Amino acid sequence: MGLLQRRVVDIVEISSDAVDISGSDISDDELQKLFEEQYKDSLSFPEYRSADYIIMAEDDLLADVIVSDQEVDVEIKNSELHDQRDVLNLVFTDKNEAELAYKAYQEGNSFEELVSDAGYTIEDIALNNISKDVLPVGVRNVVFALNEGEVSEMFRSVVGWHIMKVIRKHEITKEDLEKLKEKISSNIRRQKAGELLVSNVKKANDMISRGASLNELKDMFGARVSGVLTNFDMHGLDQSGNLVKDFPLQLGINAFTTLAFSSAVGKPSHLVSNGDAYFGILVTEVVPPRPRTLEESRSILTEEWKSALRMKKIREFAVELRSKLQNGTELSVVNGVSFKKNVTVKKSDGSTDNDSKYPERLVDEIFAINIGGVTKEVIDSESETVYIALLKEIKDAEISEEDLESYKAHFVSSGILSIREQLLGYLMKKYGVTIENSLLEKV
Image 1 (cartoon, helix red, strand yellow):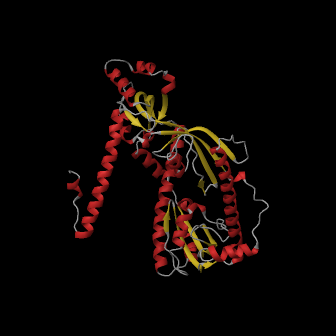
Image 2 (tube, rainbow, N blue to C red):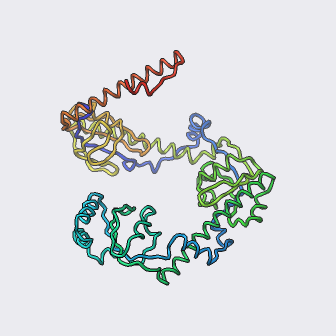
Image 3 (tube, rainbow, N blue to C red):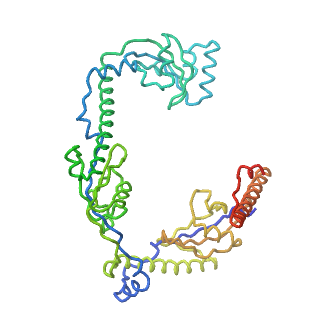
């Protein structure tokens, strides 16, 4: 039952704000010693590369394609978008409610009664001048086949479950037709630009294979975005640790650097896809990794030294507070120290009832002491925080017999599976046999 129990504790959190090292500085001799003994072989600059790049995008070609009025008219006719409907659109977020409403309609209730029962008015659900393209693909033909006054079957969309009644069938209005033509023209233009882009990229990659340069590609295909990046590492950072200047963010750091660090120097890469664009690079220079000198490591070493000093002082302060807790001394309010009373902690996952999270080691410490006991200092180096807990109460878990048996069965099953995996691994290694897992699953 230990894993199912709860512990009620007071938790003391000691952060770096509890100590002051503002007047502390590392001497040159200490810096030298720290560098030589701990960091000389581990501090280095990564490989840096410089590269030219071009980007060929769909948007760059939109002005180069033409869409005729005839193409737009054909698309509208083929998609049957010249017809419109005025409808009543009754929407349910719950499928069961929609099914009950449709059943009531089948049993004789009017559509208007369904609307009223759902808490709407006719005005609330009226939609005028809808075209086929606004309906889900699977039902648009069904709805548009309805006559005036007829009601659709129940159907689903991204917003819920619908029952729709057709009020009026009519040709598209002049105003809507102009808007539709603009939309269709834009869609066709973008489709043509995409097709032209794919064709251009194929031609460009063929030219690269025959020795063409990026500048030749830029001139021939009118790549509107190009640039030069100097001295960036695998993460796109410069030697100061900042994103390299003028990085083309539309490409994404990982996509760009992966291509740059896998390409040969002096040879243009083939254009590769990245969303709606393609890009290619030419690596112009490679600066190999090298160790940092003492001076180049100074800022890093200084920060490491200060961090170690802060943690040392925090630990010393934590030992002092722990001693007070053990002696029953009331802790006073101090900057950088927070007190959390009556926190309930679970052993199973290290979480608490109030959704706070604590280091797993602290939870283990809490479950290893008796009521009135104080845990050892638990350090979280990443956040520079030290935790101490005082155990106040042990609570048995409230769990039914059924849940308990299920819990036990889970651990027994997990144990059997673990043993089976170990045995199979031994047999395969010793005898070189293969295992038919489908047969084992029946055992």
